[in-house]
Length: 211
Image (cartoon, rainbow, N blue to C red):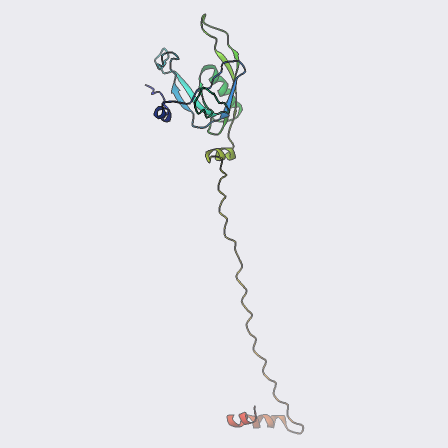
């Protein structure tokens, strides 16, 4: 047995989201989907009792909530939310709209527009003819979906990697001072003999001569 869906907030507050009304031909109700669509069991419009098919299976309907621009003065604090109870001819129209949009189904943030376009031929005397509908569905893009789920706030920017800096170049190594060239031998003095004489000097003698 299928359990009828009850909005927990509506149960708590003693109210609920009003259904979309299609009282005259040409009426359009449109808006972005605000919550995940739910499958619910149909109920009798007069008694509120769940409806079943002749074989005992529950009659199902798709419940879709959209945010519209509608404001009904008779509804206190009307926030514009409306619910589509999609079944029968409306279900055919919405299914075709989803196919044309090349989508797998209705998604949060997608925009669903339903228009009451005509009446079907009356099949039972004394009963109102079924209403005929057209529908248009626009799936949400990734940006639209993120913007909607974030309450209109832009998505946080991705963190940037810290800027890389090249390490400072090492200072050039100090170059060794060139060795002083050996003093030239005075004229008339043998250079080899002079070098030998200098080499035989003691450190004290070399210091005294400032060599």
